[in-house]
Image (cartoon, each protein chain N blue to C red):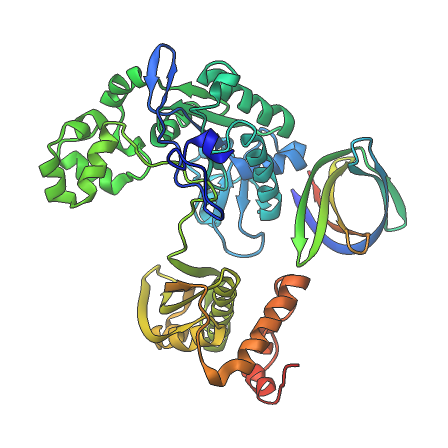
Length: 435
Length: 83
């Protein structure tokens, strides 16, 4: 079925256990009397978290709303309604700053399970239009409908039917873009918000790109835009015409990609859930509720982070041997160091022992705003071998199983519980015999 | 908007609709029986192996969040949001 729909097995049926390869680079399609290399619909759920909250709390509709990480903690804006954007509020901004800019904003704590449930419903509907769906983020999807859009008529009809389903069945606004590749479909989706639908035909691409600022392309931010402007490329049309040698001399191998971007070319196939690359690193950061000067509390928080990262590593079957620790001071000055170990680790205390010494010794004196840890150089399906730690491995596996069954945090190191003296876990472990 | 966290066990009256969906119609809290005007939103979550069904229900100018633990069939009033 996969092979026949997507033509991905290169003209042959999939072998047992074989996954379909990257999809969407088939023979293309005819639409509007033009040849389309592919037909890609990009879906952008407008102010997604805010609109899911407004479904649950109808009075939020049309009001300035900020969805923030936590009600009590210092956090960032996870999403903001269009009404707040008029005041200069943006996602990712510290929530205190957003509240200062928009004093009337209604602040709602984020409820991630609510949003993941909603996006799952959107993805389920997307799969009735094509099996080739890429979840690009929690509020964005790309659909390759090259071989399926005709069931609904034109590419616009197909996208309109999909949008109608989301708006009517789920009550959520969304903007869609249709183009011959993912990058241009995303750009098209951003042209009319909220509730827009923009089709960018292949023949319209060149005149459209002539005027489009390079910073409107996904992946080109203000800094890169400034570099390009200095090279004489403020608009995509100019970027596409820059000699490749000049772009390569300035940006190295990225030069090729930049020239393609300026010409509206994006050859990347959509990545379905079959195609996701293996993780390159696993990490977590935490912005503390307040600037913290208590060294013991910082140590405990860092251990908690290491436990979390290690649990994710084990959960996904990885272990790694490069650890990276990062801390941000109250003045936003950030220090980070990495260390390559001689062995692989997947246990929280091992990650902690390797990462904690990488942080500066003066954390308690200078205060800390943010802490983070990550593990890279990963190996999949690997168990760090240490004959002398079989008992500990069995213990960790039991903890993981209990936490999986009863929910994360059902069992934690005693050291991580507030109000208990540090190091208790080590004491318990010494006399503890699993099974 | 005022948000109040509860986390208390509550008695809930719910009906199974023709579609098979569960719909809370009233809940008892603090000695009062509150009639649900509308289920504004529902979603699912997991706590370990246990599936939790969440319902945002409107009563007057307040939205309450109810959660059903499907392993014990017990209901919890999680929080309320007042306009």
